[in-house]
Length: 309
Image (tube, rainbow, N blue to C red; front, top):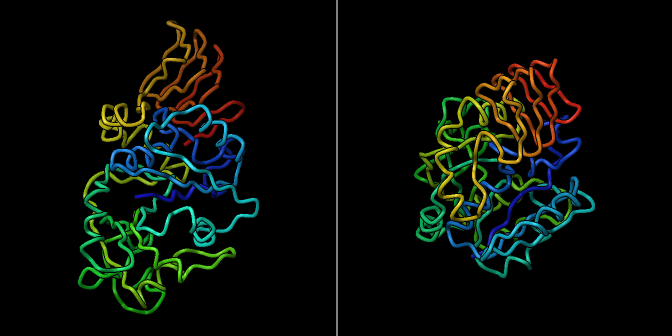
């Protein structure tokens, strides 16, 4: 089975970090966020991942030229003009070989059992199966309307009157039937593909009950690195076996003076913290320098950037 990874967004909610790097390469616990999705695909035995890219494509191309994912083949689909979640997938129809495939976002961290999701989809007889996650924030984030295991609405857009504690996780399995409903131009996958399946081939649901975190905003990114990081760190051994990358608080490539004070912080590759500097409850992205007279507390830092949280 193949997979399609949505990674072409501008990452506007993570600005100014994404002014200098593409959102999929913004690291969480020293692992590019995209790699958490690739880890799940590799662990599930997916053979090929097609990744759509647009913002800073040269950085993503360079990353994949340098990183080996073994049996997981990586194919990049660059969008010179951004096509949205629906158009971006439609562009890659022929690359998915006319088979069922996994779709996954590049800005989520999860321990989802993709094999169980795939099996649920195969049993459903539907054109697609969405992985859902229960959260008290469903109404705020955008609840999914579900009846008898079938997805019928999103945010009550179609007036189905179905309210639930579930949100869409950005992970799904689809049959090639979804391509009948997608548009080749800029378009959203919900309004075209999802509703097309709802009205025709059916859209099933699968409940994920484990770890699930969206890191697409600065507060969520900060929490994933520091306040809600325990379950992510617990993925380290599995990720190391699968893709050779794994979450950690302090990169081996960081330089920290023994006379600096660093407490409960994530320190990225090629960071330098001078004697006398103070770093507390902060996230330092790769290449950040903290001088001897600087105190960073409750912040995200990158070269030339300081973001208090």
